[in-house]
Each structure stands twice: as structure tokens, then as C-alpha cells.
Image (cartoon, rainbow, N blue to C red; front, side):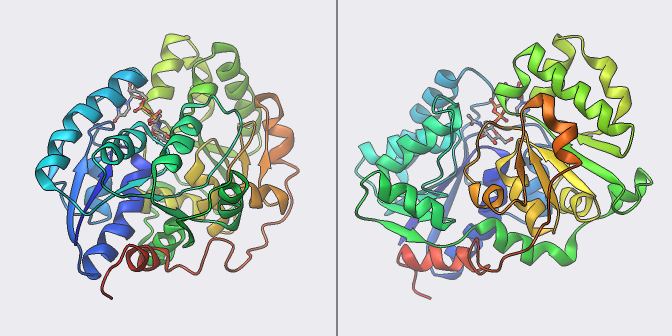
Length: 352
Ligand code: UD1
């Protein structure tokens, strides 16, 4: 059986590191397409290198642009490849423009679509990632869910067929890579264990309003008076900080370029807590036994909020939430058993 998987942005490279390998182990002929949405070395190549992901068979060179430009260009260039390759299944990950473009092209060509991270839902419904999630799920034949909440979300929406609980491939990756975590950033910045906060902010609703971004930076500056704050900065956030002339706040933090997975996880593992608006990091901090303040109005990883491990925060509440979040009690099996990649390959009809 031939399967095409589509990746385009940072969190998808991370998931591909697990799923691609399992698909090939299960006997699939595996073609990898990179849409080119993320193209900086630190946002793309570094993951292929550090996680030993196979080189893409195609790079569509889509790059940056408005949502319509990114989605449209991906569709046009992808259609040609899918028609040529004639796969039995197309697999897409998560919630980016590459995800929705891949699902739409394949569904129209009547090729079954598999969606890894199906059933994730969160407010606000007009958030680009949420639009991508809902549309992709509607077009998918295999809805591969990372959590029980995701399964329930799909059932509530009346989906009757094609739902599988596989667990989260990011948990697989955490377990697989734990012994290779890289502590060089911790050493380079002379950070002390449990004495610093890791910060990542990149969602458009946090970065694209000057007022909101400034409130976040002000709150983080307050935090930085008590704990060191390490800020691996996404290119979008860096650009907005410059455009809004907010650079002055950055002197309070240890600002670094985006990190690769082993470095990021090494940094989180020895941290005190995490402040983030990343879907992936709020869970990875949980795997590492840390708590996260999630700077979002809602999250699809709601189990961690309900259990009091993570805390949702408005920009103006970051300091207060950070110094009051409760315990991180690790609950086995919340996101599967660390074999989500193998279960996905099996569900899609792999031979092992
Ligand atoms: C995308 C995904 C988001 C995911 C995130 C992880 C969508 C709608 N969003 O958001 O779900 O959590 O990736 O990082 O697909 N840029 C660079 N270099 C790069 C990549 C981006 O400079 O390698 C800059 C560009 O100016 C671009 C901006 O960052 O306009 C935003 O990038 P974009 O691809 O639009 O989405 P992300 O914010 O990264």
C-alpha cells in the first residue's frame, strides 16, 4: 500500500518523526511531501536533522503568505503530485494550512484521508487552526484521536464512522527521545534547575495586536524579576515586536532562536514552569512533569486544565497564574500508552 504524508510546519515535522517510521515498519511505501510553509533553518531543517526524519520526496516551496495564498498554492502544487503518485491513503497532521489543503485536494480526488490529531476543538471558532481542524475532520475517513476528549468531540458532532483512539504521537516521541534530550542551552545560559521559566508565544491572536503583545511582555517582565525567563522566539513574534517597537522589553529575557526538539525538551525538563500558547508545548511540559500557563482563551488539551495541572490565562494574568498553578500529577494513559504511531499504522492497514 502506498501512503503520502504531508507536512509543512514545525509541529508536523515532530509528529512525522514517529509516524513516518512506523508506517515504513508496517510495510507501507511512504512518500513524504513538505509544503514549504516553514522554511527557516531553525523552523524546518533542524527537525529533519535532529529527529532523523527522511528527506522529503517533494518540496512544494509554498513559503509565507496570507492564508488563501498558502492554502491555494499548496492545493495547486499538491494536486499534481497526488495525481502522479496515486497513493492509497493521504495522511495529514494537526491544524495548519498544509493540513486543510492536503485533505481537500485528496478528498476531491477520492483518495481516503487520514487525520492524525482529529477531534481537537477549541474556542474561538474563527481561529485559523480551528477552522482547519473542523474542515479537515469533515473530509477525513480515518479520524485518529490523541485523547478521549477528541473522541467525544467527534461523537457530539454526530460523526458515526471512522473514529479511533490511538493516543498522542507526541507522547511516543517524548518517551523515545528522553535519553537524547540536549541540555546545551541550559549550560550555555548558565541556568539553574527549577529556577527559570520557558516562554513561547506565537499565535496570531497574541502577536498581531500591539496592546495584547505588550501586555504579555509586561507580565513576563514582572516574572523575570523573580525567575529567569528563557524565550525561544518564533519568527512571527520577532517580526511583530520590531514592528510595534516593543524591543525594549526583550532585555529582561534570555532570548534565543527557535530550538530543535532535543534542546527544547532539555530546556523544559530542567525548568520551573512554562508559559506558552503552543498546542504541543503545553502537553510536552506535562510529560516532563512541569506545569504550564497557557496564554489562550481555550485549549483542546482541556484534560490538563480540568485536572488543575495547566492553567488558562488572559495576557494580564500571567504573573498571578504562574505563581499559583497547582500540582502536576502525571496520569498514566491520559494520552495513550506511547504506542500511538504503531496503532496508527495498524489502523491504516499496515501489515505488522
Ligand atoms: C503555523 C501553524 C500553527 C502551528 C505553527 C507552529 C497555520 C495556520 N498555523 O503557525 O498551527 O502551531 O505553525 O510553528 O498553518 N516565518 C518565518 N520563517 C519560517 C516560518 C514562518 O519567518 O520558517 C514567519 C513568516 O513571516 C510568516 C509568519 O512567520 O508569515 C507566520 O508563519 P505561518 O507559516 O503563517 O504560521 P505560524 O505562525 O508559524
